[in-house]
Image (cartoon, rainbow over all chains, first blue to last red; front, side):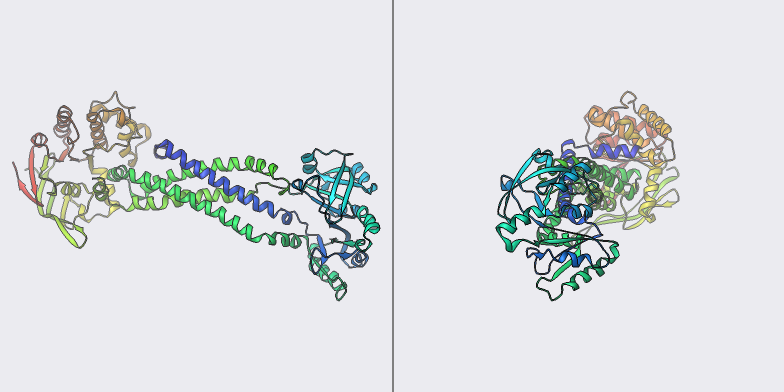
Length: 385
Length: 227
């Protein structure tokens, strides 16, 4: 108890220096936590993927459509329970800065494939019945203050024109990582219009979404679907929803690697700061440590005092950072909700942050503690004159 | 001389600077009796502090023997020396070397952490030692709230609290005014005469040397008889 009190008193002997070191560790670990959360948010679509959903797209590219007529042939492949389809709509709401994801889908089969979208049954029925109806995620509705019954107009980019629709429902998520920032509306609404204005573009879909009975069948079913359309004009590529999402993430791989690298560089920088603090602190107290050794305290006991001080500084900063990471991430996430539908601090990030704090505490103390342990008493006294 | 407590035989010590070996002590041989108050004097660089450090077990000799009782401390390992020091030697330094974040009582309690005493017993012993040096009203003061003389008294209380046989003092009056220095020398004399402690003191101060019962001088690593 006495020695613990001594460690605490020594750790805060230089109030300003200790405060600045703790602040530095807090800020660094906050930055680390936020950067990792950005990466997690980037991978959110991957994590939210279902193992029982497959995506079939044109083998050439995602932007090359597939004939809607493939639907019935896909449905005939053994192991498939549901087939839905849709396309990225890419509509703009008033201004480009109001970006959010919007898709045209076949609503009934699509919602059947996404049981994590929780929607009031009445609202769901209203949506299914109204070809000009749309549903939006809760966060998106809150962002634009949309309510059921509101009319929204999107300016088409892929499908030219002004597309008016009525909000028929607002969905919530059954899981924390459910994307609540998307707008879905009827494929038929767009397709019927295209039949009149641009007939060659009707009957084309961007993707088929398939439901399968057993995740273990994913490979087999994917091959079967793709074999069905082999040597056709529009060959298909079928993959799990996770692999499909990873394909998007891979496009940003260089950025993600840079963010990952920066998050660890931040830790190394604060390690240097903490190590400098400990080195200064120990150097200033060379005589005190020599006196304690003179009194009979041995090297390991003295080194543990140094280690204890370092751990107190580091863990105080770490605790503050971990306590602040979630509120800060929420504030950050609400500001950037159009880019990151789910921006939540993961348990893994908290554990890695804690581990980084412990590492900084141990590593910062390592060299000063080793020196204190091994410097002969007489030499310590000579050094201080 | 009474039965020697400390027997030093042919003690040699040299420091290495670059490629050069600089001899500091050259074959020192002498005895220190139990209960003796010995002053080591000599010019700067004469080796007196080195000799004191060797006797106190905080430096290692190149050759020779330092027999304290039946123990040749030259042969002890670092860990054994630490245990030996905590049981046998009390230290008084020129600049007191108290821990600034601890109170006077806690500073004196520090050496007792290495004993099996309970917290209550430790505090009782420490308070008693501070009472012995006339600081019973300064238990909760930190070093920076005490004068130089008072800080040196706390250091003396710390030196005697574990009841060691030997007290080594390196320039104990070197940082004190004349009155405070006289007080400290009087206190050390009491430790010697009333408690029977063997005191070995290094000093430049002739008045301090005069307070000792025997004076030995060192010059260029060689011991001379001064009394």
